[in-house]
Image (cartoon, rainbow, N blue to C red; front, side, top):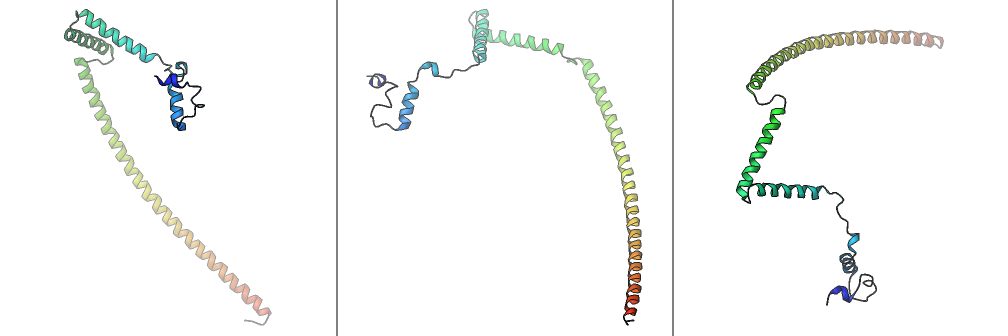
Length: 173
């Protein structure tokens, strides 16, 4: 006797069987109405499958049911289509394309050499400028330190004079 006739989906939770909640959920899931099953919304796989089956049928029919002949016809058609597409692409496979490729390669090599020399020249100028800036910064730092030392000495001398002047009022030296 099938399980569905023993208990219905609505009565699974009401029948007092020794089932765990997981088993009850599994039974409810298995016997749910078919309308609630989520179907794929995309029809692309269906159309792709039908197209592939149609293509196989076409080649088998045109070859008289011989699979090897159908495969050879298919490969021939693919080769023709590939050649047609390649002929429409810019810079297709021609002897001129190889010559043009060699010319472009030579121009790229020449441009690369010019770029390398320009980078080397710029690097030399940068190094010279960097050393000049470092020397100028070193001189400026030394000069600033000399001025700070001179200012500091002047302040200390003035402070010593002021201290001795104030001390003399109160009987000091």
